Length: 363
Image (cartoon, rainbow, N blue to C red; front, side):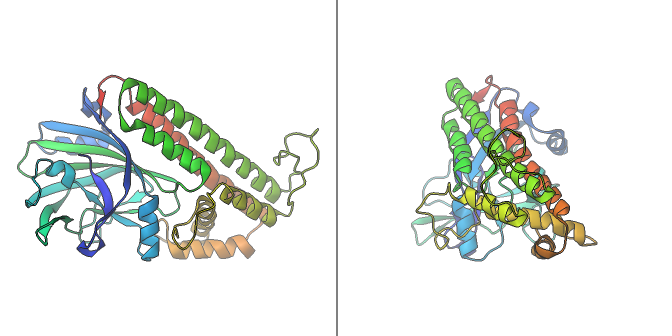
């Protein structure tokens, strides 16, 4: 009974992200909560029991659906499975809750929207009703946040406190936004291993996750090295990074922009042959990285305040990257974006290893 992530879809048919795995911490769970969240709990004197959960989600299908519908990447948090875990079939219920998010990376509050989450507590209604005497529906369209469209790994903590109850739930949500590229599939597969939180499965999960993250960071480091080297005018060798002077000359593209496009296309080669942009329109990792580079340059060209993952910023950055900056600036932008992606993956592995101490863990 862990919180779900999905889209309200006008109350017709809730579209949910796939939960790869979820773990509840039994022994001294409050120690897992970051100080920011613990401070929020301390402001609610009535809370006596806090459940702490780690939940990992595969966002690929939900992203594809949102892109098909041309909707923004804003999602709902659903606490219904936890709030109404004993609700019988075809029965209705509702509850008032206070919800906050904190400790986010690539996830943004929607403070100015009705029904949007903020970093402090905000009151919401959660309800379940029956449609056509058969279908149990969840709503309303509330408890929303926005997710960065072009970050591979996003994460945040949520805290839900039901009104008039002594319990609360704190959840660390880890979102994997792409699983079509091979190295992303490996990371998602490592997360799914945690379906049964036995000691052996935890150790197996951490081992697989570490290996998949190492493979992914190695691949991204090579991409970064080749592209940076091309833009900086470094002579490429057979390895493509200019570090082996005894190797045969590099035979691939050498013009900087051609190297950039070639390296991105090589990422797409690991996508399964059955992939179709018509059925899966959400951007692949290659396009996500491309647009992150554009955004990085756009942020440095624009003045004033503007939100993250802003389309105008990306358009400014695209024009800059293609015709308005030096190769050295392009190299720096590629470096910053790839380092950020690598750090996101490494943080996923390290934080899971830190949270999943073998003692006191159950599903």
